[in-house]
Length: 293
Image 1 (cartoon, one colour):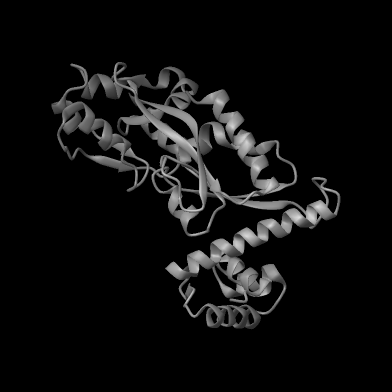
Image 2: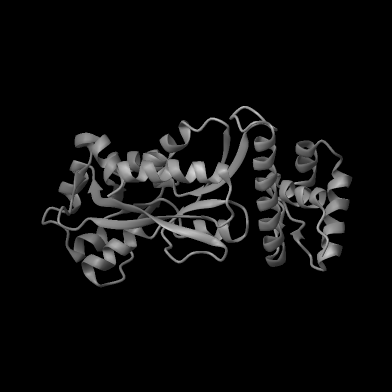
């Protein structure tokens, strides 16, 4: 199989940008050129690689080719930096590192890890920690912070630490809905707040405390800072990271101090040795050691 680098770049840009027009602008060619290169690549591999939707999406076969394309791009960027002397500002400019990070890590400890890395541009995909590996598997990202300890094929995995969550509510809410503490009846009636439809922390906590599958009223607030603010304003109770609870002071109270919920987090990245990716991994590991349990 003879894979053309220009065709692989076209595939990568199309998926990253979402449309042929945007990919063409990014690569300074015409949309027709992007389409022709991808069709030629599909002919070479004998598979349909892209679903022509809006945004564009890869097929199962396309995910494998996309992963290869992204790895070749990373190696090419590293080579350009090496040949130009290896300085952060040399070569073809900053290296773009696509990452998948869960919202709670983004809002508490992960962003400071990226802030000091000059010579890097970050394309951060926010996803639930139970689902970040899907972006790693299909080649969308080079690395992910995940709750999954089983390595994706072609990837390495290292434990970062444990993120502690507390069941919290606004003081007035706690007095109204949990006057006798956390009971099965109270959890069945009290509204709670979910981040989105993938967020199962509240349901997991309810099951651990009651051994029952309850269906209490539920709000959804899909932004970490707004999520904690919604709890502080009394919309419902929720599992909130300890770091956020401490930052909000007496606006939140722990309604069940004896039953925190701990979530282990892991760093998964391509097995490919890339100086740019290794630098990011080191920064993430150091930040995790300083902040996670």
